[in-house]
Image (cartoon, rainbow, N blue to C red; front, side, top):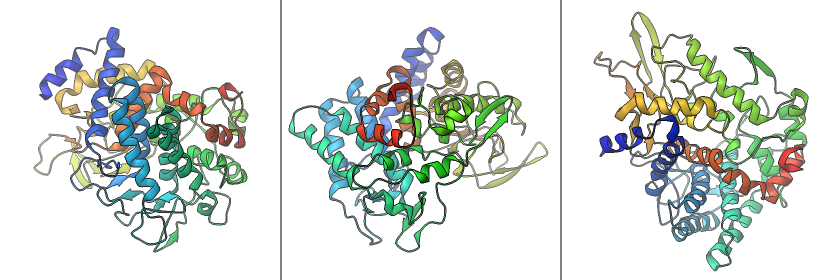
Length: 444
């Protein structure tokens, strides 16, 4: 079966079959969302490892993916409605409170929820950024399901309720910028979304746009005032090492042509910044400062990912440290030779001229080892030596929803702008972006 799948994909890797190649990859990746969910509550697993909890960020991506799937015929509209309603009804009725076994508090949700019960899992935190990602998906569902029937009306009403219920100012913890999270045991985390460029634009935009519990704009300005440009490989960029930082808010926000005060100062938008970051990632692999044999023009992509560690190995006289799940990045972040193909695919809208060739090369060169039943493997590391001393390399045994979602969403945005167009019609996001100072482009 895997060989047949490989042959089917490899038949599409010529440049003249780019559309078919991307469609095939999108469809294969979607199978994660088709299978890794609980139909009773709509929750979606963080990864396909048995016993994995649900992730609220993955659920936000899943709600977005269901809209894409319904529009592209991967799911019937009836099935997409069923799945969306299951999730929204759970989010509305699950317990909100300060108790340690609740699902959420103040309209926010715990980062991880038990896939079966929907209660807090892994002693996780009420997560501000993951709740924002969840709400982005909720709002996509509200915009997409616009039919007059009772089920679609319920989707819209429930989505509106969930977004309006989030008490964003509470998570500021009496300051201007957001805390990363809160737990019943230790209360608010000391770390804040207040320094350096990150994926938090979606968080601030949705909080600023709330008609019921909005925040003051000073916190956003305080955060963006810490942004600095760096020059790497003769490319000037607002830097963040892991590639996901340059992608996450872009899943839902079309930053092309819209600029806040920082963008106006540096004279380019965040979309252009992500394009530059994509080129920096590739150039880092070409320069290959740590001398990994597999790095190069068509082998790059460092981000938050699974890895073969924790382990230490001596390889050809070089002592290497290997990590497990960690935010890998360039040029100074952790780099143990672990590559994440999805990090390349999710940059497709920014730099298709280098991404499509890399995808094509990856399909051709990785073969069956680079593919699983859900598309590309999450991550791999040919440099890793097994404990037996064999040079067998390492491939992640699991697929992660946080990888699968961006793959599908960004292929779709590249092909049709679908998610971006839906969110351009969302009054809450539009109001939040304008409140943050964004102007121009489609916001005019």
